[in-house]
Length: 176
Image 1 (cartoon, helix red, strand yellow):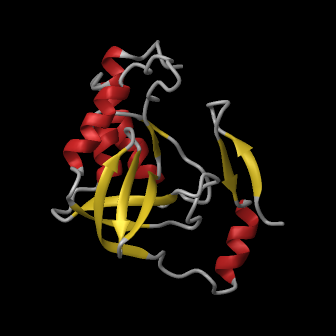
Image 2 (cartoon, helix red, strand yellow):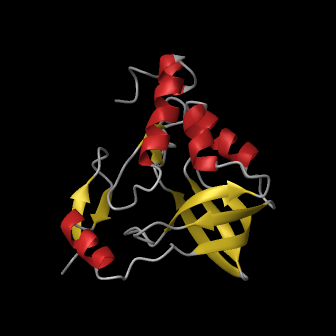
Image 3 (cartoon, helix red, strand yellow):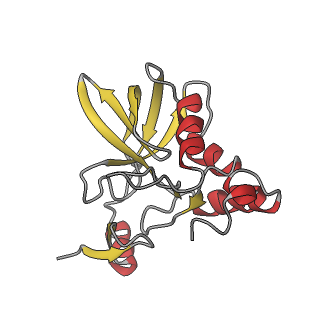
């Protein structure tokens, strides 16, 4: 089987990873093409700072933004991590409920929770994933092979960290 489960920094999360060599062979064999895009998805809910609900052709889909990890909202009476509410509000402001967005997938299309993995763009051309990192709403999270914008995300996050914006100014020591 090509897929293997790997652990992320949060013990309760696992992610699927396609070995790099296998991904390269698939591309060399000519199977790589532009990742699918979904233009005109409508935002139906904001679950947290890096997950939204959308409607695509009247089908409800949960979307996990690729390339970043925002502080976790508290569940089952646990407190929110520092910055979780701010990240959720920031995503709500960038992609409000009822707004139309465009989604672009990368190599792996879904995670083990069956959420669509995507880069999110507003109809005004704002790259939501990158903007959340620029304002310090989260940290970069790179999971191969979904790394199309990895360098760009690292630069955006480094600028926010250097300027102590968002979590970098108020949560640095609390969410490690």
